[in-house]
Length: 622
Image (cartoon, rainbow, N blue to C red):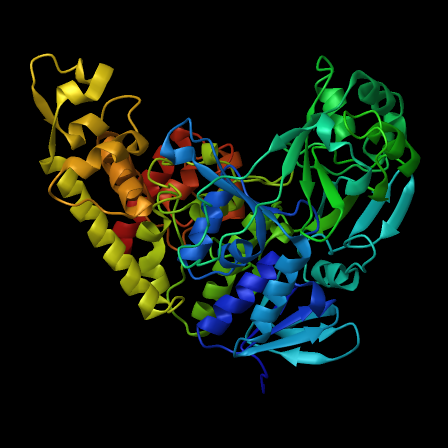
Protein backbone atom coordinates (compact mmCIF):
# COMPACT_ATOMS: atom_id res chain seq x y z
CA UNK A 1 0.00 0.00 0.00
CA UNK A 2 1.04 3.58 -0.62
CA UNK A 3 0.75 4.95 2.89
CA UNK A 4 0.51 8.71 3.09
CA UNK A 5 1.29 8.80 6.83
CA UNK A 6 3.30 6.75 9.27
CA UNK A 7 0.75 7.31 12.06
CA UNK A 8 -2.80 8.65 12.23
CA UNK A 9 -4.07 10.08 15.53
CA UNK A 10 -7.84 10.27 16.05
CA UNK A 11 -8.88 13.01 18.47
CA UNK A 12 -7.33 16.37 19.34
CA UNK A 13 -7.65 16.36 23.12
CA UNK A 14 -4.72 16.14 25.53
CA UNK A 15 -3.96 12.51 24.61
CA UNK A 16 -4.11 13.19 20.88
CA UNK A 17 -1.88 16.25 21.11
CA UNK A 18 0.88 14.48 23.07
CA UNK A 19 0.69 11.42 20.81
CA UNK A 20 1.00 13.58 17.70
CA UNK A 21 3.97 15.52 19.05
CA UNK A 22 5.81 12.38 20.20
CA UNK A 23 5.47 10.81 16.73
CA UNK A 24 6.61 14.06 15.10
CA UNK A 25 9.65 14.44 17.36
CA UNK A 26 10.71 10.88 16.56
CA UNK A 27 10.84 11.81 12.89
CA UNK A 28 7.65 10.19 11.57
CA UNK A 29 4.90 11.76 9.49
CA UNK A 30 1.65 11.99 11.47
CA UNK A 31 -1.91 13.09 10.73
CA UNK A 32 -4.11 14.41 13.52
CA UNK A 33 -7.85 14.15 12.83
CA UNK A 34 -9.99 16.41 15.00
CA UNK A 35 -13.55 17.71 14.68
CA UNK A 36 -12.50 21.33 15.18
CA UNK A 37 -8.84 22.24 14.78
CA UNK A 38 -9.23 25.46 16.74
CA UNK A 39 -10.19 23.45 19.86
CA UNK A 40 -7.12 21.24 20.29
CA UNK A 41 -6.54 20.42 23.99
CA UNK A 42 -9.55 22.53 24.97
CA UNK A 43 -10.33 21.95 28.64
CA UNK A 44 -13.82 20.47 28.71
CA UNK A 45 -14.16 20.59 32.48
CA UNK A 46 -11.96 22.13 35.16
CA UNK A 47 -9.56 24.73 33.70
CA UNK A 48 -6.60 23.55 35.74
CA UNK A 49 -3.62 21.23 35.45
CA UNK A 50 -2.06 19.17 38.25
CA UNK A 51 -3.14 18.36 41.78
CA UNK A 52 -2.46 15.37 44.02
CA UNK A 53 -0.80 12.64 41.95
CA UNK A 54 -1.69 14.30 38.67
CA UNK A 55 1.15 16.79 38.97
CA UNK A 56 3.62 13.91 39.10
CA UNK A 57 2.33 12.85 35.69
CA UNK A 58 2.80 16.36 34.33
CA UNK A 59 6.42 16.41 35.54
CA UNK A 60 7.02 13.02 33.92
CA UNK A 61 5.42 14.14 30.66
CA UNK A 62 7.74 17.15 30.73
CA UNK A 63 10.77 14.94 31.41
CA UNK A 64 9.87 12.92 28.30
CA UNK A 65 9.58 16.00 26.10
CA UNK A 66 5.80 16.45 26.27
CA UNK A 67 4.03 19.78 25.88
CA UNK A 68 1.57 19.94 28.81
CA UNK A 69 3.92 21.46 31.40
CA UNK A 70 5.24 24.07 29.00
CA UNK A 71 1.72 25.03 27.87
CA UNK A 72 0.30 25.45 31.37
CA UNK A 73 3.37 27.39 32.55
CA UNK A 74 2.89 29.81 29.65
CA UNK A 75 -0.85 30.29 30.19
CA UNK A 76 -1.42 29.63 33.91
CA UNK A 77 -3.04 32.39 35.94
CA UNK A 78 -2.49 30.98 39.46
CA UNK A 79 0.18 28.56 40.71
CA UNK A 80 0.13 26.67 44.01
CA UNK A 81 2.04 23.87 45.74
CA UNK A 82 0.01 21.42 47.80
CA UNK A 83 0.77 19.08 50.70
CA UNK A 84 3.94 20.89 51.77
CA UNK A 85 3.25 20.04 55.41
CA UNK A 86 3.81 16.39 54.51
CA UNK A 87 6.74 14.51 52.98
CA UNK A 88 8.17 15.24 49.51
CA UNK A 89 6.61 12.10 48.04
CA UNK A 90 3.21 13.80 48.05
CA UNK A 91 4.19 17.39 47.33
CA UNK A 92 2.12 18.42 44.35
CA UNK A 93 1.68 21.40 42.06
CA UNK A 94 -1.62 22.75 40.75
CA UNK A 95 -2.07 25.52 38.21
CA UNK A 96 -5.24 27.39 37.29
CA UNK A 97 -5.32 27.86 33.52
CA UNK A 98 -6.53 30.52 31.18
CA UNK A 99 -8.77 28.09 29.29
CA UNK A 100 -8.76 29.90 25.95
CA UNK A 101 -5.08 30.87 26.08
CA UNK A 102 -4.05 27.26 26.84
CA UNK A 103 -6.02 26.05 23.84
CA UNK A 104 -4.52 28.77 21.61
CA UNK A 105 -0.99 27.98 22.80
CA UNK A 106 -1.37 24.29 21.90
CA UNK A 107 -2.95 25.02 18.50
CA UNK A 108 -0.17 27.44 17.55
CA UNK A 109 2.52 25.06 18.80
CA UNK A 110 1.27 22.14 16.69
CA UNK A 111 0.99 24.35 13.63
CA UNK A 112 4.65 25.32 14.03
CA UNK A 113 5.96 21.75 14.08
CA UNK A 114 7.23 19.62 11.21
CA UNK A 115 5.89 16.22 10.10
CA UNK A 116 2.34 17.06 11.28
CA UNK A 117 -0.77 17.27 9.08
CA UNK A 118 -3.85 18.66 10.84
CA UNK A 119 -7.11 17.37 9.36
CA UNK A 120 -10.51 18.72 10.39
CA UNK A 121 -13.18 16.04 10.31
CA UNK A 122 -14.63 12.95 11.96
CA UNK A 123 -13.01 9.52 11.79
CA UNK A 124 -15.70 7.02 10.80
CA UNK A 125 -14.03 3.66 10.33
CA UNK A 126 -10.76 1.90 11.14
CA UNK A 127 -9.20 0.12 8.15
CA UNK A 128 -7.38 -3.19 8.56
CA UNK A 129 -6.02 -6.06 6.51
CA UNK A 130 -6.22 -9.35 8.37
CA UNK A 131 -4.90 -8.24 11.81
CA UNK A 132 -2.84 -5.33 10.52
CA UNK A 133 -4.15 -1.76 10.85
CA UNK A 134 -3.74 0.22 7.65
CA UNK A 135 -5.65 3.49 8.06
CA UNK A 136 -8.87 5.38 8.59
CA UNK A 137 -11.93 6.38 6.56
CA UNK A 138 -13.43 9.72 7.62
CA UNK A 139 -17.17 10.31 7.81
CA UNK A 140 -16.83 12.47 4.68
CA UNK A 141 -15.49 9.44 2.81
CA UNK A 142 -11.77 10.32 2.65
CA UNK A 143 -9.38 7.37 2.97
CA UNK A 144 -6.16 7.97 4.91
CA UNK A 145 -3.55 5.21 4.97
CA UNK A 146 -0.94 4.63 7.68
CA UNK A 147 1.12 1.99 9.43
CA UNK A 148 -0.40 2.71 12.85
CA UNK A 149 -3.47 4.42 14.29
CA UNK A 150 -3.79 5.94 17.79
CA UNK A 151 -7.36 6.43 19.06
CA UNK A 152 -7.80 9.30 21.54
CA UNK A 153 -11.55 9.95 21.43
CA UNK A 154 -12.15 11.30 24.96
CA UNK A 155 -15.86 11.64 25.75
CA UNK A 156 -16.78 11.98 22.07
CA UNK A 157 -17.06 8.24 21.37
CA UNK A 158 -20.81 7.68 21.54
CA UNK A 159 -21.15 10.84 23.66
CA UNK A 160 -24.57 11.59 25.16
CA UNK A 161 -25.16 14.67 27.33
CA UNK A 162 -27.79 14.69 30.10
CA UNK A 163 -29.38 17.81 31.67
CA UNK A 164 -32.37 16.69 33.69
CA UNK A 165 -34.47 14.51 31.37
CA UNK A 166 -33.01 16.25 28.30
CA UNK A 167 -30.56 14.19 26.21
CA UNK A 168 -28.21 15.56 23.53
CA UNK A 169 -25.95 13.51 21.27
CA UNK A 170 -22.71 15.40 21.83
CA UNK A 171 -19.13 14.86 22.95
CA UNK A 172 -18.98 18.28 24.57
CA UNK A 173 -21.85 20.77 24.91
CA UNK A 174 -22.46 22.35 21.52
CA UNK A 175 -20.26 19.87 19.61
CA UNK A 176 -20.80 16.62 17.69
CA UNK A 177 -20.19 13.09 18.94
CA UNK A 178 -18.51 10.16 17.16
CA UNK A 179 -21.13 7.43 16.67
CA UNK A 180 -19.90 5.83 13.45
CA UNK A 181 -16.52 5.19 15.04
CA UNK A 182 -18.27 3.33 17.87
CA UNK A 183 -19.93 1.14 15.26
CA UNK A 184 -16.50 0.48 13.75
CA UNK A 185 -15.20 -0.80 17.08
CA UNK A 186 -18.18 -3.16 17.35
CA UNK A 187 -17.33 -4.45 13.86
CA UNK A 188 -13.74 -4.95 14.99
CA UNK A 189 -15.12 -7.13 17.85
CA UNK A 190 -13.92 -4.93 20.72
CA UNK A 191 -15.87 -5.04 23.96
CA UNK A 192 -17.32 -1.58 24.64
CA UNK A 193 -18.65 -0.26 27.92
CA UNK A 194 -20.19 3.01 29.09
CA UNK A 195 -18.82 5.46 31.63
CA UNK A 196 -20.03 8.82 32.87
CA UNK A 197 -18.49 12.07 33.93
CA UNK A 198 -19.86 15.54 34.55
CA UNK A 199 -19.13 19.22 34.84
CA UNK A 200 -20.49 22.12 36.95
CA UNK A 201 -22.41 25.09 35.57
CA UNK A 202 -20.37 28.17 34.71
CA UNK A 203 -21.18 31.37 36.60
CA UNK A 204 -21.03 35.05 35.71
CA UNK A 205 -18.31 36.47 37.97
CA UNK A 206 -19.92 39.93 37.98
CA UNK A 207 -22.92 38.47 39.85
CA UNK A 208 -20.86 36.96 42.71
CA UNK A 209 -20.42 38.66 46.10
CA UNK A 210 -16.69 38.01 46.49
CA UNK A 211 -16.49 39.61 49.95
CA UNK A 212 -18.48 36.71 51.39
CA UNK A 213 -15.91 34.20 50.06
CA UNK A 214 -12.42 33.32 51.34
CA UNK A 215 -9.54 34.34 49.07
CA UNK A 216 -7.12 31.60 48.02
CA UNK A 217 -3.92 33.31 46.76
CA UNK A 218 -1.21 31.82 44.56
CA UNK A 219 2.28 30.93 45.81
CA UNK A 220 5.51 32.88 45.50
CA UNK A 221 8.00 32.19 44.11
CA UNK A 222 5.84 30.82 41.31
CA UNK A 223 6.20 27.01 41.20
CA UNK A 224 6.39 26.38 37.46
CA UNK A 225 5.98 22.85 36.14
CA UNK A 226 8.62 22.79 33.42
CA UNK A 227 12.35 23.23 34.00
CA UNK A 228 12.42 25.02 30.63
CA UNK A 229 10.04 27.80 31.67
CA UNK A 230 11.30 31.39 31.66
CA UNK A 231 8.28 33.64 32.14
CA UNK A 232 8.14 37.25 33.23
CA UNK A 233 6.60 37.95 36.62
CA UNK A 234 2.88 38.66 36.59
CA UNK A 235 0.02 39.25 39.00
CA UNK A 236 -1.66 35.94 39.76
CA UNK A 237 -5.42 35.60 39.59
CA UNK A 238 -7.45 35.09 42.76
CA UNK A 239 -9.44 31.96 43.51
CA UNK A 240 -11.97 31.79 46.32
CA UNK A 241 -13.41 29.28 48.74
CA UNK A 242 -17.09 29.13 49.68
CA UNK A 243 -19.59 26.61 51.05
CA UNK A 244 -22.94 25.09 50.26
CA UNK A 245 -25.64 25.64 52.90
CA UNK A 246 -28.44 23.69 54.52
CA UNK A 247 -30.78 25.22 51.93
CA UNK A 248 -28.55 23.88 49.12
CA UNK A 249 -28.83 20.39 50.54
CA UNK A 250 -32.61 20.67 50.82
CA UNK A 251 -33.09 21.81 47.20
CA UNK A 252 -30.69 19.23 45.76
CA UNK A 253 -32.06 16.37 47.88
CA UNK A 254 -35.71 17.22 47.20
CA UNK A 255 -35.05 17.29 43.45
CA UNK A 256 -32.53 14.45 43.12
CA UNK A 257 -35.22 12.28 41.47
CA UNK A 258 -35.08 14.72 38.54
CA UNK A 259 -31.37 14.06 38.05
CA UNK A 260 -30.64 11.41 35.38
CA UNK A 261 -28.06 10.00 37.81
CA UNK A 262 -30.86 8.99 40.20
CA UNK A 263 -33.86 8.65 37.86
CA UNK A 264 -32.41 5.60 36.09
CA UNK A 265 -31.77 7.51 32.87
CA UNK A 266 -28.01 6.98 33.43
CA UNK A 267 -26.83 3.50 34.38
CA UNK A 268 -23.10 3.89 33.80
CA UNK A 269 -20.54 4.57 36.55
CA UNK A 270 -19.10 8.00 37.23
CA UNK A 271 -15.81 9.04 38.86
CA UNK A 272 -15.78 8.03 42.53
CA UNK A 273 -13.45 10.86 43.52
CA UNK A 274 -15.32 13.63 41.71
CA UNK A 275 -19.01 12.98 42.48
CA UNK A 276 -21.89 15.18 41.43
CA UNK A 277 -23.41 17.50 44.03
CA UNK A 278 -26.55 15.35 44.15
CA UNK A 279 -24.39 12.26 44.75
CA UNK A 280 -22.42 14.09 47.49
CA UNK A 281 -25.55 14.90 49.48
CA UNK A 282 -26.76 11.30 49.05
CA UNK A 283 -23.48 9.56 49.95
CA UNK A 284 -22.59 11.95 52.78
CA UNK A 285 -26.08 12.47 54.16
CA UNK A 286 -24.76 13.44 57.60
CA UNK A 287 -22.76 16.36 56.19
CA UNK A 288 -24.67 19.64 55.99
CA UNK A 289 -22.18 21.62 53.87
CA UNK A 290 -19.50 21.04 51.25
CA UNK A 291 -16.58 23.17 50.09
CA UNK A 292 -16.68 24.83 46.68
CA UNK A 293 -13.74 26.54 44.99
CA UNK A 294 -14.64 29.44 42.72
CA UNK A 295 -12.02 29.45 39.99
CA UNK A 296 -11.75 31.90 37.07
CA UNK A 297 -11.59 30.37 33.59
CA UNK A 298 -9.05 32.95 32.48
CA UNK A 299 -8.01 36.57 32.34
CA UNK A 300 -10.43 38.75 30.41
CA UNK A 301 -13.44 36.52 31.05
CA UNK A 302 -16.09 36.60 33.77
CA UNK A 303 -16.73 32.85 33.56
CA UNK A 304 -16.25 31.21 36.94
CA UNK A 305 -15.92 27.47 37.49
CA UNK A 306 -17.55 26.36 40.81
CA UNK A 307 -15.27 23.40 41.49
CA UNK A 308 -17.21 20.80 43.50
CA UNK A 309 -20.67 21.48 42.06
CA UNK A 310 -20.76 19.01 39.16
CA UNK A 311 -24.42 18.31 38.37
CA UNK A 312 -26.94 16.99 35.85
CA UNK A 313 -30.02 18.47 37.53
CA UNK A 314 -32.52 20.42 35.38
CA UNK A 315 -31.42 23.98 34.66
CA UNK A 316 -34.04 25.62 36.87
CA UNK A 317 -33.03 23.44 39.83
CA UNK A 318 -29.35 24.25 39.22
CA UNK A 319 -30.27 27.94 39.29
CA UNK A 320 -32.19 27.66 42.57
CA UNK A 321 -29.48 25.55 44.25
CA UNK A 322 -26.60 27.82 43.20
CA UNK A 323 -28.32 30.84 44.76
CA UNK A 324 -28.36 29.20 48.20
CA UNK A 325 -24.55 29.10 48.32
CA UNK A 326 -22.65 31.69 50.34
CA UNK A 327 -21.70 34.59 48.07
CA UNK A 328 -23.76 33.26 45.16
CA UNK A 329 -27.14 34.59 46.28
CA UNK A 330 -27.47 36.64 43.08
CA UNK A 331 -25.26 34.52 40.82
CA UNK A 332 -26.25 33.97 37.22
CA UNK A 333 -25.53 30.69 35.41
CA UNK A 334 -24.01 31.35 31.97
CA UNK A 335 -23.68 27.68 30.95
CA UNK A 336 -25.55 24.83 32.70
CA UNK A 337 -23.81 21.86 34.26
CA UNK A 338 -24.33 18.46 32.66
CA UNK A 339 -23.42 14.78 32.79
CA UNK A 340 -22.04 12.96 29.78
CA UNK A 341 -22.00 9.26 28.98
CA UNK A 342 -19.51 7.85 26.49
CA UNK A 343 -18.12 4.58 25.15
CA UNK A 344 -14.83 3.12 26.29
CA UNK A 345 -12.95 -0.13 25.70
CA UNK A 346 -12.09 -2.01 28.94
CA UNK A 347 -8.32 -1.95 29.13
CA UNK A 348 -7.74 -5.71 29.37
CA UNK A 349 -7.87 -5.43 25.55
CA UNK A 350 -4.60 -3.46 25.38
CA UNK A 351 -0.97 -4.35 26.06
CA UNK A 352 1.24 -2.32 28.41
CA UNK A 353 2.44 -0.56 25.24
CA UNK A 354 -1.19 0.66 24.77
CA UNK A 355 -1.34 -1.32 21.51
CA UNK A 356 -4.47 -3.44 21.26
CA UNK A 357 -4.11 -7.19 21.55
CA UNK A 358 -6.54 -7.83 18.72
CA UNK A 359 -4.96 -5.67 15.98
CA UNK A 360 -1.33 -4.86 15.30
CA UNK A 361 -0.64 -1.15 15.00
CA UNK A 362 -3.84 0.03 16.71
CA UNK A 363 -3.27 1.97 19.93
CA UNK A 364 -5.72 3.38 22.49
CA UNK A 365 -4.97 6.38 24.73
CA UNK A 366 -7.00 8.43 27.20
CA UNK A 367 -10.62 8.02 28.17
CA UNK A 368 -11.15 5.20 25.70
CA UNK A 369 -9.11 3.14 28.21
CA UNK A 370 -11.40 4.10 31.09
CA UNK A 371 -9.38 6.93 32.62
CA UNK A 372 -10.44 10.45 33.60
CA UNK A 373 -8.42 13.64 33.68
CA UNK A 374 -6.32 15.71 31.30
CA UNK A 375 -3.06 14.53 32.84
CA UNK A 376 -3.86 10.81 32.65
CA UNK A 377 -4.90 11.25 29.02
CA UNK A 378 -1.79 13.24 28.08
CA UNK A 379 0.50 10.66 29.66
CA UNK A 380 -1.11 7.81 27.74
CA UNK A 381 -0.99 9.78 24.50
CA UNK A 382 2.73 10.35 24.92
CA UNK A 383 3.40 6.65 25.59
CA UNK A 384 1.19 5.55 22.70
CA UNK A 385 2.98 7.94 20.34
CA UNK A 386 6.41 6.62 21.32
CA UNK A 387 5.31 3.00 21.02
CA UNK A 388 3.59 3.55 17.67
CA UNK A 389 6.92 4.71 16.24
CA UNK A 390 8.80 1.82 17.85
CA UNK A 391 6.18 -0.56 16.38
CA UNK A 392 6.77 0.84 12.90
CA UNK A 393 10.53 0.58 13.32
CA UNK A 394 10.19 -2.96 14.75
CA UNK A 395 12.10 -1.87 17.84
CA UNK A 396 11.67 -3.04 21.43
CA UNK A 397 8.60 -1.32 22.97
CA UNK A 398 8.81 1.34 25.68
CA UNK A 399 7.25 0.06 28.91
CA UNK A 400 7.76 1.82 32.25
CA UNK A 401 7.28 -0.31 35.36
CA UNK A 402 5.70 0.69 38.67
CA UNK A 403 9.04 1.55 40.26
CA UNK A 404 10.07 3.96 37.49
CA UNK A 405 7.16 6.32 37.04
CA UNK A 406 3.54 7.12 37.79
CA UNK A 407 3.04 6.59 34.07
CA UNK A 408 4.05 2.99 34.72
CA UNK A 409 1.74 2.72 37.73
CA UNK A 410 -1.21 4.00 35.70
CA UNK A 411 -0.72 1.71 32.71
CA UNK A 412 -0.09 -1.31 34.94
CA UNK A 413 -3.26 -0.57 36.91
CA UNK A 414 -5.26 -0.31 33.69
CA UNK A 415 -3.94 -3.52 32.19
CA UNK A 416 -4.19 -5.73 35.29
CA UNK A 417 -7.43 -4.56 36.91
CA UNK A 418 -11.06 -4.25 35.88
CA UNK A 419 -12.12 -0.70 35.03
CA UNK A 420 -15.67 -0.31 36.30
CA UNK A 421 -15.47 3.44 36.91
CA UNK A 422 -13.31 6.25 35.50
CA UNK A 423 -9.73 5.75 36.69
CA UNK A 424 -7.92 8.59 38.42
CA UNK A 425 -4.31 8.59 39.54
CA UNK A 426 -3.36 9.29 43.18
CA UNK A 427 0.00 9.09 44.95
CA UNK A 428 -1.54 6.35 47.12
CA UNK A 429 -1.67 4.04 44.08
CA UNK A 430 2.14 3.82 43.99
CA UNK A 431 3.98 1.37 46.25
CA UNK A 432 7.27 3.21 45.75
CA UNK A 433 6.10 6.79 45.91
CA UNK A 434 9.11 8.05 47.86
CA UNK A 435 11.15 7.11 44.79
CA UNK A 436 8.59 8.70 42.43
CA UNK A 437 8.64 12.32 43.51
CA UNK A 438 7.93 15.47 41.53
CA UNK A 439 11.49 16.72 41.97
CA UNK A 440 13.21 13.64 40.50
CA UNK A 441 11.06 13.01 37.42
CA UNK A 442 13.96 13.91 35.15
CA UNK A 443 16.40 11.77 37.13
CA UNK A 444 14.14 8.81 36.48
CA UNK A 445 13.17 9.46 32.87
CA UNK A 446 15.57 11.70 31.01
CA UNK A 447 17.59 8.65 29.87
CA UNK A 448 14.54 7.56 27.86
CA UNK A 449 13.96 11.06 26.49
CA UNK A 450 17.58 11.02 25.35
CA UNK A 451 17.28 7.51 23.89
CA UNK A 452 14.21 8.33 21.80
CA UNK A 453 15.36 11.86 20.88
CA UNK A 454 12.34 13.44 22.57
CA UNK A 455 14.30 16.38 23.97
CA UNK A 456 17.14 18.49 22.63
CA UNK A 457 20.76 17.79 23.52
CA UNK A 458 20.96 21.23 25.12
CA UNK A 459 18.25 20.25 27.63
CA UNK A 460 20.07 17.02 28.43
CA UNK A 461 23.33 18.87 29.06
CA UNK A 462 21.54 21.39 31.31
CA UNK A 463 20.03 18.62 33.38
CA UNK A 464 23.30 16.72 33.70
CA UNK A 465 24.83 19.92 35.06
CA UNK A 466 21.97 20.14 37.60
CA UNK A 467 22.67 16.59 38.73
CA UNK A 468 26.35 17.38 39.22
CA UNK A 469 25.53 20.55 41.17
CA UNK A 470 23.14 18.60 43.40
CA UNK A 471 25.81 16.03 44.28
CA UNK A 472 28.32 18.81 44.93
CA UNK A 473 25.84 20.49 47.28
CA UNK A 474 25.31 17.25 49.21
CA UNK A 475 29.07 17.11 49.72
CA UNK A 476 29.12 20.68 51.05
CA UNK A 477 26.37 19.91 53.59
CA UNK A 478 28.37 16.91 54.74
CA UNK A 479 31.60 18.85 55.29
CA UNK A 480 30.28 22.14 56.74
CA UNK A 481 29.99 22.16 60.53
CA UNK A 482 27.99 24.49 62.75
CA UNK A 483 27.98 25.12 66.51
CA UNK A 484 25.04 23.44 68.22
CA UNK A 485 24.58 26.62 70.25
CA UNK A 486 23.36 28.31 67.06
CA UNK A 487 20.60 25.78 66.51
CA UNK A 488 18.22 26.62 69.35
CA UNK A 489 16.03 23.75 70.56
CA UNK A 490 17.34 21.44 67.86
CA UNK A 491 20.91 22.01 69.09
CA UNK A 492 19.95 20.79 72.58
CA UNK A 493 19.39 17.31 71.12
CA UNK A 494 23.18 17.04 70.71
CA UNK A 495 24.14 17.46 74.38
CA UNK A 496 27.66 16.08 74.09
CA UNK A 497 28.61 17.79 70.82
CA UNK A 498 29.85 21.32 70.34
CA UNK A 499 29.24 21.17 66.60
CA UNK A 500 27.55 19.03 63.99
CA UNK A 501 27.50 18.87 60.21
CA UNK A 502 24.74 20.64 58.29
CA UNK A 503 23.86 17.20 56.98
CA UNK A 504 23.10 15.96 60.54
CA UNK A 505 21.16 19.14 61.27
CA UNK A 506 19.04 18.68 58.16
CA UNK A 507 18.22 15.10 59.13
CA UNK A 508 16.52 16.24 62.33
CA UNK A 509 12.71 15.98 62.46
CA UNK A 510 11.00 19.24 61.60
CA UNK A 511 14.07 20.84 60.00
CA UNK A 512 13.63 21.96 56.39
CA UNK A 513 15.81 23.62 53.78
CA UNK A 514 14.07 26.91 54.68
CA UNK A 515 15.52 26.61 58.18
CA UNK A 516 18.98 26.15 56.66
CA UNK A 517 19.03 29.16 54.36
CA UNK A 518 19.79 31.85 57.03
CA UNK A 519 22.79 29.79 58.19
CA UNK A 520 24.59 29.32 54.86
CA UNK A 521 26.17 32.77 54.50
CA UNK A 522 28.58 32.21 57.41
CA UNK A 523 30.54 29.47 55.65
CA UNK A 524 33.61 30.08 53.53
CA UNK A 525 32.51 27.54 50.95
CA UNK A 526 29.75 29.12 48.91
CA UNK A 527 26.49 27.23 48.68
CA UNK A 528 24.32 27.26 45.57
CA UNK A 529 22.01 30.21 44.96
CA UNK A 530 19.59 27.89 43.14
CA UNK A 531 16.58 26.94 45.26
CA UNK A 532 16.05 23.88 43.04
CA UNK A 533 19.58 22.59 43.68
CA UNK A 534 19.28 23.19 47.43
CA UNK A 535 15.87 21.50 47.66
CA UNK A 536 17.01 18.49 45.63
CA UNK A 537 20.10 18.10 47.83
CA UNK A 538 18.05 18.49 51.01
CA UNK A 539 15.58 15.78 50.01
CA UNK A 540 18.39 13.35 49.15
CA UNK A 541 20.05 13.98 52.52
CA UNK A 542 16.96 14.03 54.72
CA UNK A 543 15.37 10.89 53.29
CA UNK A 544 18.53 8.93 52.41
CA UNK A 545 17.70 6.06 54.77
CA UNK A 546 14.11 5.75 53.60
CA UNK A 547 15.15 5.99 49.95
CA UNK A 548 17.72 3.22 50.44
CA UNK A 549 15.11 1.01 52.10
CA UNK A 550 12.68 1.62 49.26
CA UNK A 551 15.39 0.79 46.73
CA UNK A 552 15.80 -2.63 48.36
CA UNK A 553 12.06 -3.17 47.94
CA UNK A 554 12.31 -2.06 44.32
CA UNK A 555 15.11 -4.58 43.72
CA UNK A 556 12.84 -7.38 44.95
CA UNK A 557 10.06 -6.08 42.73
CA UNK A 558 12.40 -6.00 39.72
CA UNK A 559 13.28 -9.65 40.27
CA UNK A 560 9.63 -10.65 39.82
CA UNK A 561 9.26 -8.29 36.86
CA UNK A 562 12.26 -9.91 35.18
CA UNK A 563 10.56 -13.32 35.33
CA UNK A 564 9.09 -12.90 31.87
CA UNK A 565 6.25 -15.03 30.51
CA UNK A 566 6.70 -16.12 26.86
CA UNK A 567 4.02 -15.08 24.36
CA UNK A 568 3.33 -18.74 23.51
CA UNK A 569 2.90 -19.85 27.13
CA UNK A 570 -0.35 -21.80 27.66
CA UNK A 571 -2.23 -21.72 30.96
CA UNK A 572 -4.88 -24.28 30.03
CA UNK A 573 -3.01 -27.45 31.04
CA UNK A 574 -1.42 -26.20 34.25
CA UNK A 575 -2.42 -28.66 36.97
CA UNK A 576 -3.32 -27.12 40.31
CA UNK A 577 -4.22 -23.75 38.80
CA UNK A 578 -7.81 -22.68 39.46
CA UNK A 579 -10.08 -22.18 36.46
CA UNK A 580 -10.63 -18.56 37.52
CA UNK A 581 -6.87 -17.95 37.41
CA UNK A 582 -6.57 -19.62 34.01
CA UNK A 583 -9.38 -17.46 32.66
CA UNK A 584 -7.81 -14.24 33.99
CA UNK A 585 -4.31 -15.09 32.78
CA UNK A 586 -5.70 -15.79 29.31
CA UNK A 587 -7.68 -12.55 29.38
CA UNK A 588 -4.94 -10.22 30.59
CA UNK A 589 -1.92 -12.01 29.08
CA UNK A 590 0.61 -10.80 31.70
CA UNK A 591 4.16 -10.12 30.52
CA UNK A 592 5.86 -11.19 33.75
CA UNK A 593 5.32 -13.10 36.96
CA UNK A 594 5.14 -9.79 38.81
CA UNK A 595 2.42 -8.45 36.57
CA UNK A 596 0.52 -11.74 36.83
CA UNK A 597 0.46 -11.33 40.61
CA UNK A 598 -1.19 -7.92 40.35
CA UNK A 599 -4.14 -9.12 38.30
CA UNK A 600 -7.36 -8.65 40.22
CA UNK A 601 -8.43 -11.84 42.00
CA UNK A 602 -5.12 -13.69 41.59
CA UNK A 603 -3.80 -15.22 44.83
CA UNK A 604 -0.22 -15.93 46.02
CA UNK A 605 -1.06 -19.64 45.58
CA UNK A 606 -1.86 -19.07 41.91
CA UNK A 607 1.49 -17.35 41.44
CA UNK A 608 3.36 -20.19 43.17
CA UNK A 609 1.81 -22.74 40.82
CA UNK A 610 2.44 -20.54 37.79
CA UNK A 611 6.05 -20.00 38.85
CA UNK A 612 6.75 -23.75 38.98
CA UNK A 613 5.26 -24.44 35.54
CA UNK A 614 6.91 -21.37 34.05
CA UNK A 615 10.30 -22.63 35.23
CA UNK A 616 9.62 -26.06 33.67
CA UNK A 617 8.53 -24.42 30.41
CA UNK A 618 11.76 -22.40 30.18
CA UNK A 619 13.93 -25.44 30.99
CA UNK A 620 12.18 -27.48 28.31
CA UNK A 621 12.73 -24.70 25.77
CA UNK A 622 16.52 -24.71 26.30
